[in-house]
Image (tube, rainbow, N blue to C red; front, side, top):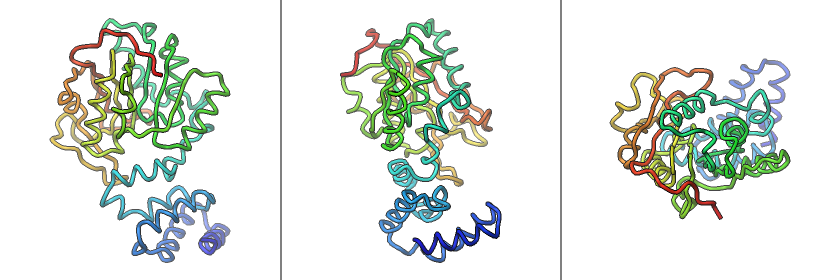
Length: 304
């Protein structure tokens, strides 16, 4: 590993960032061939991230390409669990603050519109849960700007590093938001005996295979009193509602799901939806807002 860092540092003195990245990839590919056991390569990328070596952002993706091809679900879980590659961009300085506070403004605008059309005032919302909350920055935005009367705002995420630093930041700011380390694959156990007025899952199901995504949608609907809001990865050419099965995007191995169908299979009712194949304002524009077929009568059960 020191040898790899030395080589990349030498290149950095002579070439620009793009050339450096491409050259470094070739060097690392030569030094660390993919014929090395997967477990060893996983250990290497974890150590590289801890040492903050040059290229630590793309290094895991380059070295684990075969893993991503063969098992994208496990590949994404590995990256999130160890705060690697794209997961490493979720840090307090990058996600909190006035400039970064509302990365999903269209999603929340549509959520509020959906609630209004259902005769629900945002001021009535007392409890919110987020599946895949990372640092808790969207929960904090909902606390301050979307559901100011909510007394319970909680979430879980697989990225323990993000949860820890996010929790510390939220505590420092005096926020009511609570974040915890947890896997959406265990969501039914995590939410056992609990209900929330609103449950959201924004940009998270793209990292889970179809069966896991379906079970997550079903669990969210089972534990929502009023509305479940989901932002998924949009298919580039076809409205997701027309997909017969989930597919995998070739560029990053992200899953493209038919969330409309998942809601239907889970016994939910779609209140509103939006599909847009191109990104707008850097947002994933495939939104589905749904409610259980028989809405719960209880307003909220305070989690223990």
